[in-house]
Image (cartoon, rainbow, N blue to C red; front, side, top):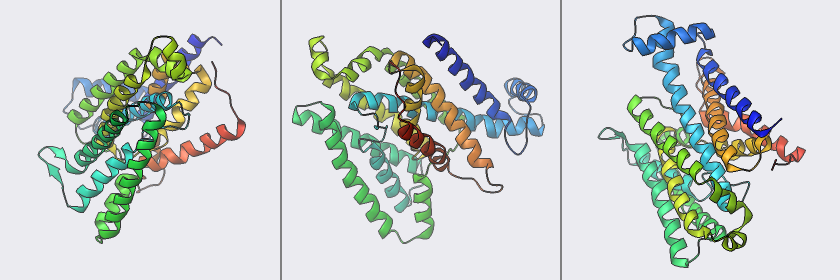
Amino acid sequence: MKPVYRVMLISFLCLLLTFLSLGFGEISLSPAETCHYLYLALTLPEGNGMVGQDVLQFIRLPHLVLSFFIGAGLAVCGAVMQAVMKNPLADPYLLGISSGASLGAVLAIALGIGMIGSFDGIGAAAFLGAGLVSLLILLISSISGKGEGLTLLLAGFALNAACSAAVSFFVTVVADTSKTRSIQFWMMGNIRADSWMAIGILAILVTAGCFYFFSQRRILDLMLMGDDLSLTMGQKLSTYRKVYIAVMALLVGAVVYMSGMIGFVGLIIPHGVRLLVGSSHGRLLPLAALTGGTFLCWADILGRNAISGLELPVGVMAALAGSPFFLWMLISGKQVRR
C-alpha cells in the first residue's frame, strides 16, 4: 500500500475509534444516538434532562477532548524528543522534565497548597517545576558551549537524579497518609475534565505546538542523520535543539498541569507509527498526534469502566496497554519503514 493511502487509512481509523469511544460505558450509546446527543449538546448546551445527553455532554465529551489532546501532545513530543536525542527510547520525560514536575507537585501537596486563584495549585507547581528544570538544562547546555544530544542527556540525567531524590525525601518526611496517597495518585496520572476553559487552553497550546513541529519536519529529518552531515548541508542543529526543548517543556508542563504523570504514550506511539509509515516526520507527526489521542481516549475509558465502582488512573491503563506492545516490538525485531 502506498504511504499516502496508509496515512489516510490510519487517520480514518483513529477518528472512527475516537468517535465510537463516546458510546462506550455503563450507559451504552449507539453511533446514531451519539450523533443525536452531540447535535443536542451543540444546540441545547444547557441540557434538556435526557440522561444520554447529560452523560455524553457533561462527562464523556470533556474527558474525550481532554484525553485526546493530552495523548496527542505527549505522542508528538515523544517523536520530537527521539529525533532531538537520536535515541529511539527517548520520551518527553527523558531530560528530567517529569522529575521537576513531580517535585513541584509533591511540594505543593506537602505544603497543603490547594487553589491559587482560579488555578489548581498542584498542577501549577508541577508546571513551574517542569519549566525550571528545562531552563536549567538549557542554561547548562549554553554554559558548556555545546548543544549536542549527549550534553543535554547528561544534564537531564543529573537533574533527574537530584529531583527524584528530593521527591523521595519529601514523600518519606510527609507522614500524612492522605497526602501520601494524593502524591501517588497524581504521579500515576489522572484525567480531570473540570473546566472547558482549561481544556480549550490546553487544546490551543497542543495544536499550536503540533503545527510548529510539523513546520520543522525537515530539520527533524536532518537530526536523524547526525550533526556532521547536517553541517555539510549548512544547518547547525544545536540551536534548533534548544528551541525544541523549550517548546516541549511548555507542552509537557501544560499536560502535567492537567493530568499528572502519564507515561508510555510518548514512547510507544511514535514507535508504532514509524513501523507503519516510516521515519519521515511529515507523515510521522500528524499520525502520532491522531494515534496518541485515540490511544489515551480508550485508556481513559477503560480505566473508568474496567472495574465497576472503581476508577483506575489513566497512567496505569496506558502502561498496561503499552508495555506488552513495546515488549512484542522488541522481541519481534520489527524494522522501521523508510
